[in-house]
Image (cartoon, rainbow, N blue to C red):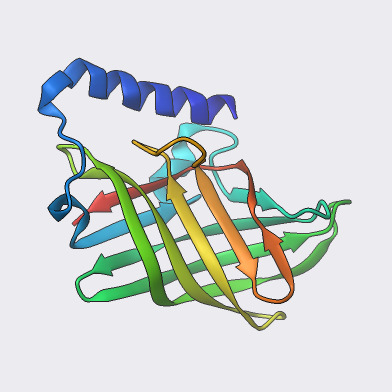
Length: 177
């Protein structure tokens, strides 16, 4: 949690230092294609607690998510994949495998900085496979410029099974292409 706060603080300080040179995301700023990293890639170099993204469910189970891909608003699409590990409240692995993006449900950009680093939230329909086959909705949230109540990380709602909707740790990022 401290690492995430430090990283977000550095981003906010950078934005404040740039002042008016940093425009808020416009309608046009949110259109196009965005690469996303969820608890993976160079984000892992920011220290402990950054990778993987971890979310919990009401019963105490957790899910670890890593991955990357793209979301596009015109045409509306998503691609990419990664891994997941579902653990019970005692830490025992219940399921693990891979996820593959199927389609984009929605994407809301929050802020696009001049260097194309962006905050936003995507809901992506994914398919889980590898010992546990199911469809799910993956939510990838980068809190740069986020409205109140939106937190950094990934969440996974395995439809009609379990909803890992409480962010525990990890960071995500969008890069406008």
